[in-house]
Amino acid sequence: MSCVLRARGPHFDVDAFLKASSLDALTAFHRGEAHFEASSLSRRGSCSGMNISVSTRESSDLKGLVGDAIRFLTDNGAELRRLRDFPGLQRMDLDFPVEARDQVFQSDSFPPHLLSLLGELRIGLVVSRSPAYRAAEEQSFREQ
Image (cartoon, rainbow, N blue to C red; front, top):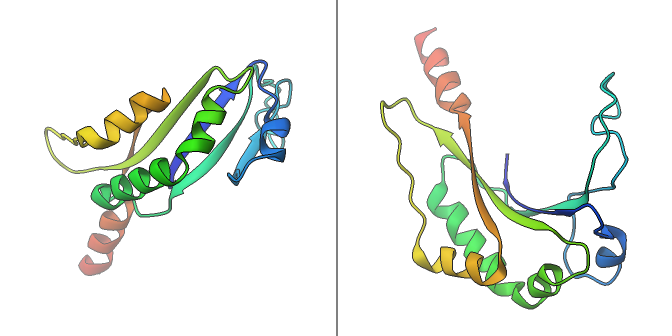
């Protein structure tokens, strides 16, 4: 999983935004489309939006993810302000994949500079915890 900017809104014309944008969407989705087309689930999306890759680093490299995110927000500031103010956009979130470590208590922090950029652009911060598959796989391999 990579660090992703998610933008959406029930009346957001994602195609119109992307047509004139320097940002490349990983995925674009439209209100009324099935969430999982290959699935038997028939739930339809209530929003249109897109996901944009901010970093492809591993979830174990939070420092690198944060550095990439700061560069992305800084390098694309003008376009992100255009997105923020685009008609129909309801919400933007920057989703960080953070590896769940085998600890009783896990704390991850984000620098004020990143938080300030996010605040100025009205982008929320999401932390998605995921199991440490790689570490578990390596441990299993060593035990064999």
